[in-house]
Amino acid sequence: MEIQKNIYLRDYNTFAVQAVASQFVDIQDERQLVDLYNSGIFKNRFFVLGGGSNVLFTTDFEGTIIKISSKGIQHFIEGSNIYITAAGGEVWNDLVWYAVEHDFPGMENMALIPGTVGASPIQNIGAYGAELMDIMYTCRAFDTLTGEFKTFNNKECGFSYRDSIFKSKYRGRYIIVSVTYKLNLHTKRNTSYGAIETELAKRGIQNPTIKDIAEVVSHIRVEKLPDPSTIGNAGSFFKNPIISNTQLEALKHSHPNIVNYPIDEETSKVAAGWLIEYCGWKGKEIGEVAIWKNQALVITNKGNATGNEIFQVSQQIIDSVFDIFGIKLEREVNIL
Image (tube, helix red, strand yellow):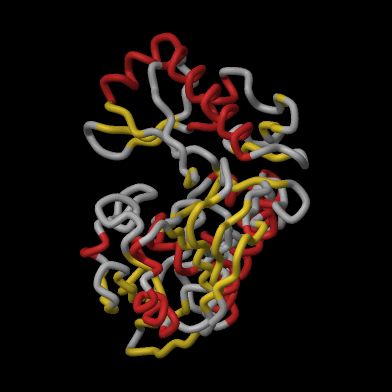
């Protein structure tokens, strides 16, 4: 295991912004984390990097970047339940297609979400009516404070919308080294999202397989979101805000078309993309930073933007949405 010095990070983040890490280490095996602990690295500043799809470097990183590259997927079936265990460095979309190709339902709606398996429980990733919290069984994590491994069950992860204890209470403490997902052979197909239904109808598919759904979801994402291999971005930059139904009803008087999704009797989720588009940001360009023409939730790097320039544009968006709607958007991307 080699600890490299002064490593350029442009190729390690999907925003493709340039920054330098004073130290960088690539982890291929979870046992290497014990060696890192014994070396004392975790006593100083560090950041764990997976696919680099949920991070914005606004300056050089004075500390150690720990890149998780461990690989491996295996499964076993018990009755109608399927247990799939994947290493933290596995690409999430590769895991989805592993399940699809084995005809294991439950992951297909989350096809093409960027990032790695290790990030999936931290963020409680989700899309098109599916969330990780509904299928995660356990995750194995390395405790950077004690140098020991610990297994968390679903309840212990404290999942909520795009959040978990790994992002709040234990932020930065645990490194996810593997995740076990529990699927069921009898899970019903979820095509309730309008965009999925519309695309299936276009293709003349009435009884979709999980492969059909994964392909349709992938198609929708590609149409709506820029490809980070050619246009720097981190997918959705902001969370959909959750507000009280009282506030929502008040907003409906002046904005009857506000896009919202009921959560319970007291709260609703509002579409951040709609709020941002209403404020005139969709397709707008400021220097080397642009808001994506097909989805206002996505901020892009036209080629030579700095992380700080992207951050400043995101702040302008937050301010304008708050001025008009009284709703404060929260960034989904990690800011460093």
